[in-house]
Image 1 (cartoon, rainbow, N blue to C red):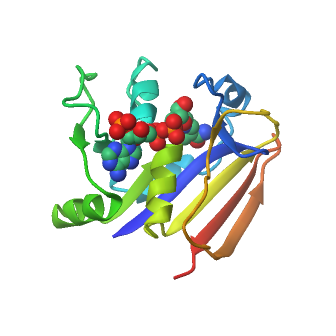
Image 2: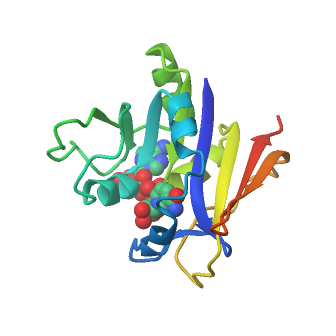
Length: 174
Ligand SMILES: NC(=O)c1ccc[n+]([C@@H]2O[C@H](COP(=O)([O-])OP(=O)(O)OC[C@H]3O[C@@H](n4cnc5c(N)ncnc54)[C@H](OP(=O)(O)O)[C@@H]3O)[C@@H](O)[C@H]2O)c1
């Protein structure tokens, strides 16, 4: 099982403002920064409950692959858009991977700040692609937090885009 992170962050390391505002990403929406290629490579998405709640408000459902929502507080999922294939899981990252591996999934896209941090703490992320957006938000929801251990990374590639996006790809060194 392979796990990848693919997310956009401000230069000061935030993935959203404290009120979930991501309007600062709008100027870059049409910049093809390899998201489609990445999304084609995964077979399921694992998101935290908070990211799920934000995505639900978008109006149209983003994901064309199965989505697993992690939550210990939700007892069931709310009414979903028609095209959404979505399941609730309440389990530690290692158990989430075991369950999904047994069901035949091979490459997971892990998203949401706290969720990514929990998978990183468990040593269960293989690849991180961060697209740095040229803005300092000053405060907000952080991509990274504290970890119980160091996590050396191998730099794979950095790409720059005319809009000012700078995308770096790393592999976790085991
Ligand atoms: N810039 C980007 O690329 C990007 C990408 C993704 C998200 N975002 C933004 O980031 C914000 C959300 O991030 P966030 O850090 O606040 O939260 P998050 O990771 O989306 O969700 C956190 C919640 O997920 C649940 N969870 C995570 N791991 C779990 C596990 N192993 N078992 C059970 N439950 C688990 C918990 O829900 P319960 O409290 O229900 O237990 C936890 O409170 C949103 O504003 C979203 O729009 C930005």
